[in-house]
Image (cartoon, rainbow, N blue to C red; front, side):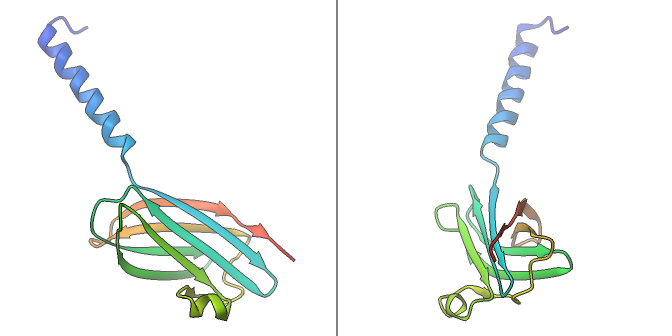
Length: 127
């Protein structure tokens, strides 16, 4: 039990600092869609510190990377697609059968190679 008012204040400050740091942690939103002839993925990083980031899309044994991109207002947004029109609009090219098992993991990786955010999505399946 903490008996000293000073020790109690220090403990409260440490807890508050830990909670505040966690509330501002980077996050990632992963969305995906799979069709018989198309794979489409978005990996969007949020609440990122200023700097350059690479994103990764992983499904089964398939891996694609995009970047590096500088975070703008704490965000990095990347698209991966097998559709030639979307590739022409800036999406990173992937094979039509890139998505395996209708699941994709997206990562946001900083310039030092550290994964700052990671998430997995179950893809929308369209026929």
